[in-house]
Image 1: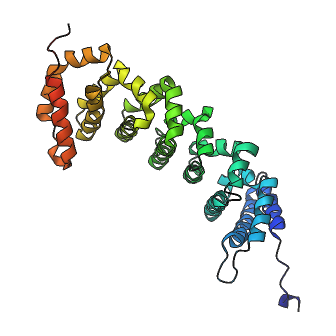
Image 2: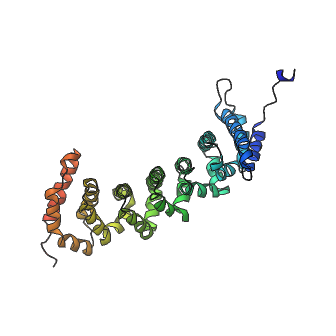
Length: 337
């Protein structure tokens, strides 16, 4: 009659240790055994999800959640899960995402213990998430987790100042469209979520950053080029990035790249070029080099605006901006003195 009696369920710490044990076995599992270990991992992850979120029969218990979280931190469970992410089955990977996101949102005394753990105890996890796009199987999962991590400014700072940050400028050019698009989404979040942090970063790292993003803007891939220009335009339209703006609009090379966009056959790229040009023209403190280029190309700009098709964008602001920009260009001297 043993079948009438349920086995005692594992305590939260036992559950974490059991999961770690099965995850580590995946490291050296033969193809015949791997499925068995995957299934065990899946079972333990689902049990942990019940502790965190409850189900139809069980409500989540705060003391069990605390025990589970503490054991996860003390045994580096998140580290082993990320290291072996590609060896888990599809549903288990999704459960790892849920585990991460739930722990990130868990607070004690207005702080996230998980954020403290990731930054101060196991920063290697963040670095592995950054490098996720290098493995096509798990690139999207890593991107999803990382974007939730960088909602916290301290992790966003860690990523921006990590040597691996500039990997994103390579990842957005990966031939696999979904991975490249996801990497661009993460890059955008990194550079727009925490404005004060980003302003400091861009001001202190202008040369390296502008070299990296300008390479993307000259890419032969339309999607890469357009998304990069849109991101750059978003950055230059933020007044909080004052130090970066000052350097950007003083740089004659940036104006030359803008002019290349204006000459592109695709009107969406022309529009993005215009959104950058209007700032160069309106800047009251522009450098002499920039002013000389504007004067030298005055006739070309006027000719461009004759055929610049803005009616299809259905935006009255663009019409006003075009009229203002064209007026300022016409007021430039006809030749350099």
